[in-house]
Length: 287
Image: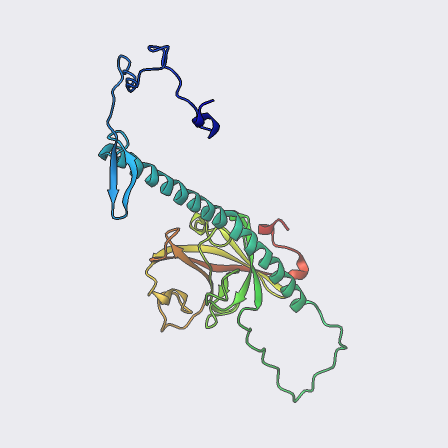
């Protein structure tokens, strides 16, 4: 046996052209078939030496780079679109659910504040002066607000800061209280849960305010769009801050247009009648 076989070497297989295996000439490279093109590979030299091999077919071209850019741009736009859809879903359904939950809590607080006390009645002294009601606390519920045409109602809180009106319409602290002479003014966000459809109100539409002992039915008298700096719309006499009020008015304010805030939508209403709560709900609310 050959010594190379003992060392594990594999003897060269004879080619078909030379059955004896005696020829040492190198085998011919395979010829390309019709329609094929042979591209010569060449080494790619780097600072560390020859790292890889590439050909003309794998070299990036302008068209391939353009296709890559379009694909990446499309993926970014699709991702951005999904984010926008998620945000829109939150604005429509998520935020409304959060506001409704807080409104239910505020409604319970208002009912508790208006509940009659069980303390015995004490006859007041003839000489004792009448007690002056304490001012409302910021963020606390003070009244109910109903707009039958929109089939919407809210609990109104005291104050118009961002913290106050985050989940409820807010009462301007310097304005009149419900049913009083002056201008009961309320601000609310222009979102789906609050004053989103306020622009649908027409002259004569009812706006009902619920107090502790009475219902106050107002009728829309004017709709205006003003600049944010025109704060005289919530004056005791809207538009005339130096004039003494003689009417009992209601004013609702919100941002305009929708999804922006460079204007203010204003709804003015005048008191039509007052109805004791002991007589039931007003007809405007289905009473």
